[in-house]
Image 1: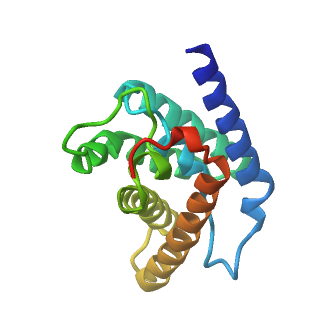
Image 2: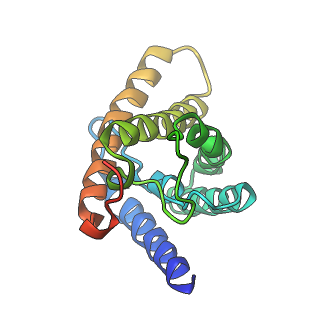
Length: 174
């Protein structure tokens, strides 16, 4: 139990650090803004209670907001996906259910499941974030284009991250 908590704390520190120190400085003309830190919420174990998911989501978003000086934009988007996470997991639940001690990962439930799960989670986060950031419908096309390009790039980073943390013993289903 303690080792699991330490693993998630290290994941939090690594992903927030990567976001703040590297990815926040990586932008293509303002159109691609990768937000890899959403993996923190996506990879919480299936058994994590919703109030704890919401608290972790809030702390994650506030951490990024503090470094980016975005006054709650990231917090609102992360709490939003934290709230919807349990519904999304139920939507994609396998017939036999989840191993409640496991965490959602590419190698635990396979490519098709993970692409669906990550696309919805990243897509909802990014759409809400960019719509709140723009806070106007005047340039909705540009806002949606920014969101779409950022979603695609972030999903690529999520899959790269999954490949980097892959361990053969974690593979349970294909």
